[in-house]
Image (cartoon, rainbow, N blue to C red; front, side, top):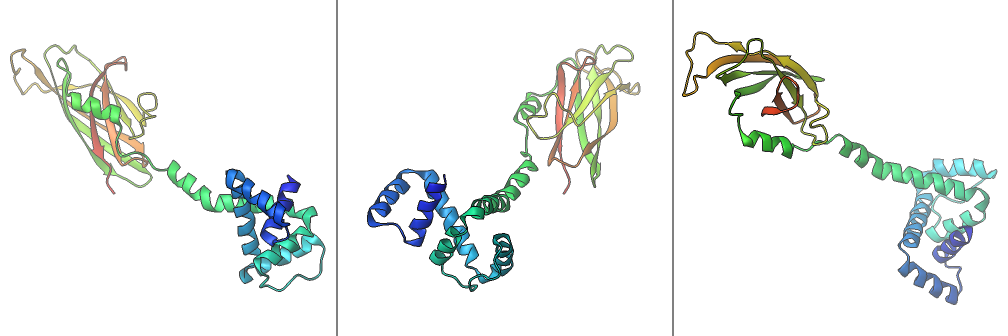
Length: 248
């Protein structure tokens, strides 16, 4: 590995013989990894030649045990040749510099992408498109009540059913738009018991009765779209699904 670094320094510093330079350029054209190494060395050399890096130079000077350093405007090739004389501590410094450069350029992008959720969950969108269950006909909507670290949703509406046993209950769950969350990781889950609206007579061919449904759910502020899902009492079959856009 050190021999390769020596060749890179010789190539950048112009100290390779004609044959060595020809052979190195042939290897450079065929090896993407080698090209990346050369680019890193060139960038580091340019950084050391920058007048704005005086503080870094002084730190390196202390590590090398020297009292003085070259002028702050050393040409790129000369900086590489000077680093060659300090090879005993150069490689650890280069390794740390490479890590620092990688963290500076790539870590923000990585962290930023981890906080970005898709705007929709295709599987839940398909359930919404499918429509209501013919036996338990839910018509629900949701609204956002509050935000600021936690989103509070009010889910309400009606259920129309012909034969709903007394004290029947359903499981209501709230999901983010992250496809990986559904179905195993709801943000919120509770049990709701519809209340019969006895002021309304049975409707339709099957004599369906109307039941009111209302609840409030809490979820962390982490999604641009929230989905609410109604399941049977056992929490297995999905009967109904809806969604609400989070307020900005």
